[in-house]
Length: 144
Image (cartoon, rainbow, N blue to C red; front, side):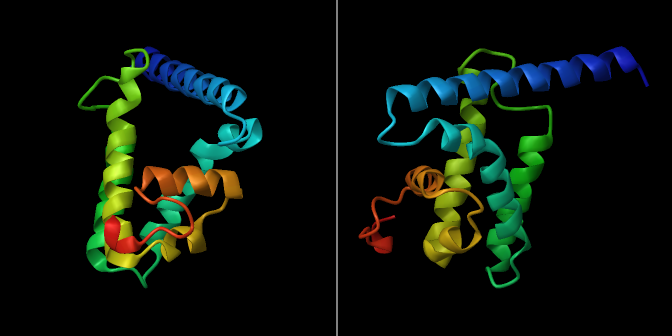
């Protein structure tokens, strides 16, 4: 195995994650009413834990768990629809895939699954609910 390729890949992932965190931090500073800076910085790891917890929940329909497992594989694979090294738009396909899968899970299981498995703060949960196509707490799940 060529270690230079592995090292370059690790550096690229770390740099991309740092840019992601910087973007979230800038957004949180401009919109403190939506999400706090701390919540924004924790959002990525919390979202990955949510996806893992949902995929492991045997109470969810099998198709949902398969879709979540496929999402994890898609996020891990280095081949994307839009290459990750492209600034800003490189992660757009990942965000779209996460949103599509979360919306499908919510349609089949209801928003309670997000609430039950969310490991982060209330601000982060509001962001995940928005990503999944849910409005506020009074949102009708049939509208998803």
